[in-house]
Length: 159
Image (cartoon, rainbow, N blue to C red; front, side):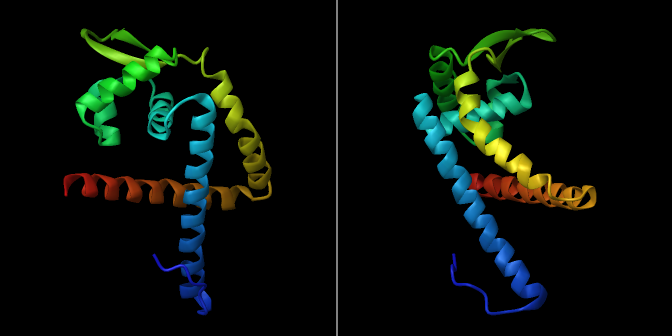
């Protein structure tokens, strides 16, 4: 977790600066999400899981457990808390009525979404300054680096 600034130039120095910038961005994102969660009356883990369900669409509890690394009991508690707040609902899977899916109640998450909108607008303004080719590069890097992080999370959960 070295935090010193690089004195190296060239590619190695740029890579080192990028790694540090990614760490700072990740920490800032966590702090932002925690602040929004606190304002919404949620704990940070519940907020992140709510966002995962929102991005993934209706999900079975087992799928949520696999994506998050939470135990089945922890996922049940998570779903119960989110349901009690009216943020999710359990519904029958149309493909298999024996299976229960959890879906976000988009009509109830407006105040949470509103907390993220000022940052989203600022990020859109930042992205507007990049060319289409640069955006494709940023997208490729972000998607691939996100997969690397998730792979590492899975490794840590198996240890």
